[in-house]
Length: 427
Image (tube, rainbow, N blue to C red; front, side, top):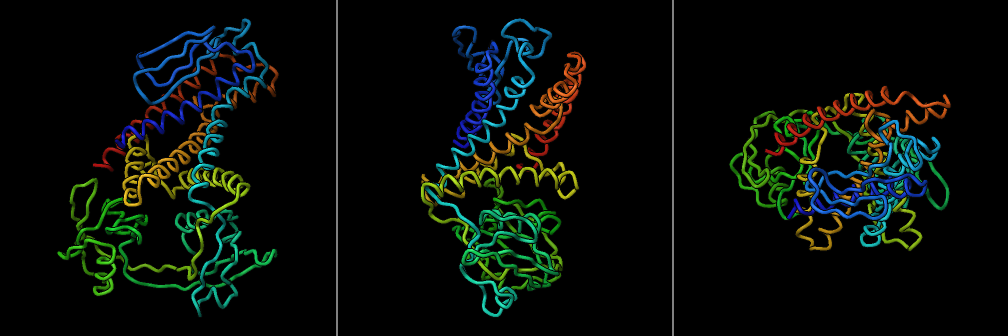
């Protein structure tokens, strides 16, 4: 069932991407020779006018083949016969349509589950935040210089970049005015395994593991379920909380039993002493919205995912993430399965919303990644068209073709690496 859902999500995203190329090609009177969904041998096809519409065997991928797109052909209706601006519009349309799809899917999800700013719900009495003047009802619009539009954006920023131990700077909106709140956060030093668990789940479901700490080093992943610690059965989040309260972690080894993809595993972990800061306030992630609010927060949702992809790429290039953190189709299917499984206790509607959320993430991701100026991607082709617009003459087709071919080879090597990495991580 998960495989079918994943295929449907991938197909929707790819069809919309290729539809963007197709519609802009037709609008610019470029001959589309084939519009295909899938890859490999053709299962079904029909021809309407100048275009053959095909459904192919493999459900991943798709294509919008245009006359003369990769050739010297410059006759009437060919890709190269059109102005450089028309060609740029056609190439950019695929990624842009992915962002449009993410927007419309966000409308559906937010209409059901809501969205909203990081509105402070409660501030711990006597905490540094309270003493600095933070109050319930404040809307956090900036966290350490990073603009915050959504509650989930603050949550993700804290998760990805951590909480500084020296100083936190918040900008909050209160009564229509912006206020600056600066304080030194609460700091704790203790032994840790480096994980957090779902406080709303029936079992001790791990929702995140911290990079560099024992859980992550042992290969335990988000989505795994703790079933025992040092021979004590753990059958619920309450049992996990109770065990950790009664048996504080020390420098002694801890044997953790856990489920990974339904199979039971054991890992012997040595807790590490670490210092970390805490936020002593809670904030909302979702609020019901009016019709205009739904449109506003749907646009902010797409903006959030665009920034997330760019931020993640930046962390990849700076070494905060490694190639081992990348996921391909296999890893994505596994993530979709884990997300939907975690939503099952809350009913079919929540499972659908979870699947749509994954589609939003993937569609926005594909839109941004395709605009990266790398050979063989839409962004790489746009670079050549921009150069043509500046020089007022195209780069030699054979030179451009060889560069794109080299980029394609590099992408294929990366895909194989990611595939092997995904399989190893899942197994």
